[in-house]
Length: 192
Image (cartoon, rainbow, N blue to C red; front, side):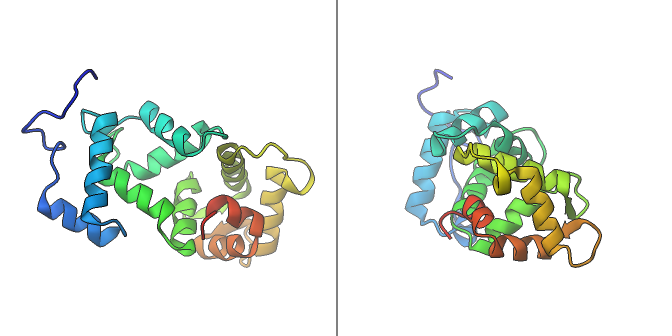
């Protein structure tokens, strides 16, 4: 880690024109911003790979008042799109863009994918409780009594939005429900 600059010849140390074009097409970042993000990424991760521990450290910078660990466990698995146990620059910048630049539907879709822990295309009460608790942790929300209790909130959301009556939420039900719940929407997409 004492490496001040990236070594020449490493595939992750230089952005190709094709890579920049792909990132510009899939984010709202300019080439200059992409290059700045890349320089910062290499400064923090000279190997060009971000592991889980470093990922948590990076997220803690964005949410210093919260506890990022629980959220990051799910986020890391979602962002590590090739499942190699690390996040490379492309995966990193696409994840940052999706969680910060996407419209409300995009952010909620990302949240759904992240918390559909079983991968069955549905979120049940246990998964939704995990989602809400992790979001509370991330933003430093400590008042979890009454209507803010994650399990109660998850149960209420499912009861209200479960159109199919299967006690689970589809992606469409989840997105519609979050859009209509200002507290959950504020947690999932604070800038939308």
